[in-house]
Length: 449
Image 1 (tube, rainbow, N blue to C red):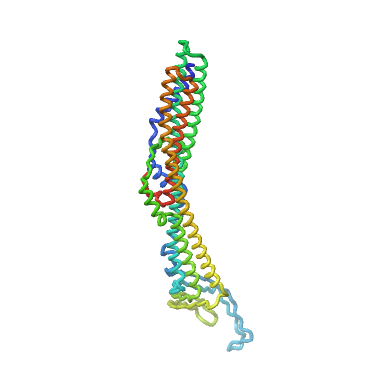
Image 2 (image 1 turned 90 degrees about the vertical axis):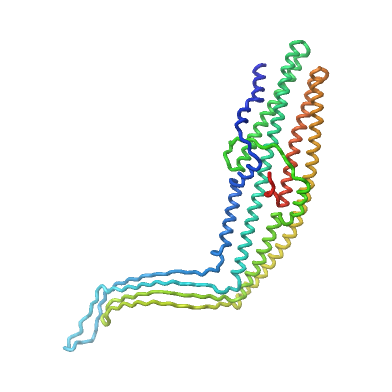
């Protein structure tokens, strides 16, 4: 029996030194760590950086292009020139002329400048489209951050709930352990039977198993949180179990501003603007393109001597300017089809915007109803804990006086345990419902945790 009690006392006190060394991970610290380290958020930030590069002047088409070309050619010829039928002044046949290793070199270099002066305003609207896409990528990154933070606090509050449940189970095990001691003393003095001791031992065993399972569940959930925070899986910490709810008036103000802050609605506005620019970009195909070009070059030709001419070196510098106009008067109807399709895409995006607006308003009303319902449940569960605590205290007094059985006392203890764990669940369910409502109103990243 002594070993039995030592085991359960270890469950009650064995981890206290460990807890004393663990740091408190506040909600705000968890938020900051996730914002800094989470892999999904890092990817979203990189996507924003790509969009930022795309919307810069270097990708706008407004800058000219400048290219440099250079070349060199070398040739060496061995030739024999014959003069059939030709005679010298003295009447002898004219001799053949042999030219060995006749070398020739040619060197060229040039700078070419091209600039599109006018392209039917296509690049102008494309530039504006890229600006909108950059802002859209920022909204998409914000949506990723919001979803990650909602996931973060879902796990964070689960750790908090299990932590509170662990404390409740620890207290239950302590009470059950004291019952064994009391039952043994009572048995020694002949006040009860061996059955009371056995009942107390069964309850201690059940409480011990529940506590051990809860400890394991807590360790696993902490690892889940460490994954979201992108830190060591076995990083030890405690969490803040204090929950504060946003005042009702402030929440109502958030709901009134939801249409201008909801990230899904803001994305539909950006997509609609992008589609409108697509129409204008495609319309630019109806207009001409005017371009300017310029060249500046250097050439050197070095030719070898021939049978009739001496070798020459010819060096030239050239400079040229030009303009071009291209007008695709008829492209087989391709531009017309692209414009029509862009208009249809715009109409579809406008319909999708209306659908998302309706869905967001529905989601906000549902989330508000769920939040208020869970707050009511939490209030009821708090009152239920008070009721069961009073019932347990009275049952404990009656049990110590021998007026009720250990089974009745145990039932009062279980009722209190269930009430406390249900209250913990209701508290964090209400807080998560509040966070989901804040996300829908676009305020999740603006509140202090």
